[in-house]
Image (cartoon, rainbow, N blue to C red; front, side):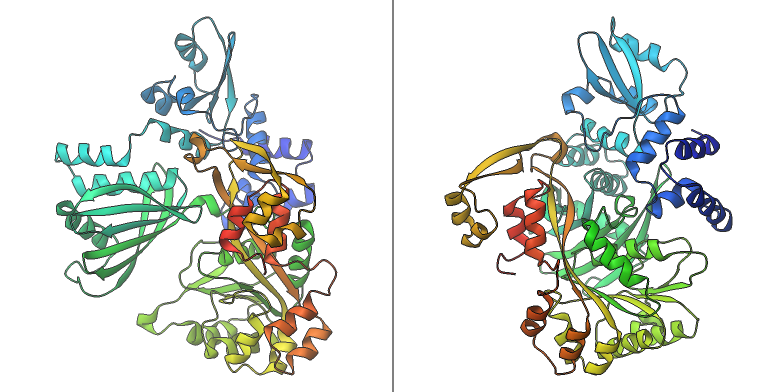
Length: 549
């Protein structure tokens, strides 16, 4: 289906979704980098997916429906046959006694209304526009369980390994999984997905089929199929129906066989803006103001899987302008950003963070992103880069923002260099969001809160407090949660903290000074605000952050 870009631009301007200046910049960038104007506007955060959906709907002269936040129930979806739904890309959105609303990403199809009228006789059929990825998501309702499909594939005896792998990847994409695990047991292989940070079992494969599946993964990832006792890492580019998904493969030997972990680098996290990540307007201003400085260092800290790189990518998108030269060195490059020069760490050629960073400095960059500061060598070069006129962004493993400074000093970075270069430390964690489809309010008493954690009474002083939770529905696979957001803690480096750094302070000393700054909040306090606003639950917050942090 061809999108009328001229019409889209007219609507965006008419509805004041973007300014003429931003449109002009988008057109220039689009010509220079050979990408669509829509891709530029979304990647820069100038329009969000909701505005894009409404604009596309208006271009087709139909209403817009957001299937992402208003997911139809399975029984609703199944009223249209799988064959017709996938051929015409339609899903039943709403039905009453007299009318039905059917969502599609292609409302221009000839005779579509008449064809749908045969399924809903006597009812007025109205078409609405929905985003393509949301339409695709609803098709998951037609799928049998993975276990049932495994049995059918093995029984058919046709392309067993390729078919099983494809079914698993398609389900992972449909459930927005971040990781796929193949875990060999004594008699079978357990398949698990990590969805919104939590692992869930999705099916089991007979052990006698696993070697073929494993070999196919190795071949596609360009790994050795004759190696069974060493760890191997590789990558696969999975392409289906024009959708490209990069898969990062890790294989390690265990007592019961080789375990495979696959990181799914899918489109559903590429377009995140700082707002999407969960940053308040105040925090967004802090990070963007720090990033406007011509040199210095911004560190994002947290454990593996806390969304640090995604935060830096969202910041890079804001800074990515034609007059700015941005270079990154990453392990791995998770998402390609148009207009940014990205380097992949390669240990086989000795291209490591510490070896690659000096080469980057000779390339005349304005902004450098270092995927992770892992040791003294990288730390020293990164700090010196920030000192010599570059804005340096990086991730760092530390439990909270105040711990980052003592850790840098432990890496033998001179305190005066840290004080001279460090601009901002961001600590973050990811929490699951309450499913918008089944969110409901609940009343909790002081006694209820005290049983969970006595510290909660400091934040909820009323005898009865209204909070929120998800009941569980088809959209969230009965978990009550769908999607994730982040909780943040910021330490801005002011003169007082700079003076403190020179005296080799403890993390507690840094925290005591930082918390005196107006607007400072801890990870837990930021999380409490998200609990009060109905974004997440107390239980989920306490799963990832201590109530005493």
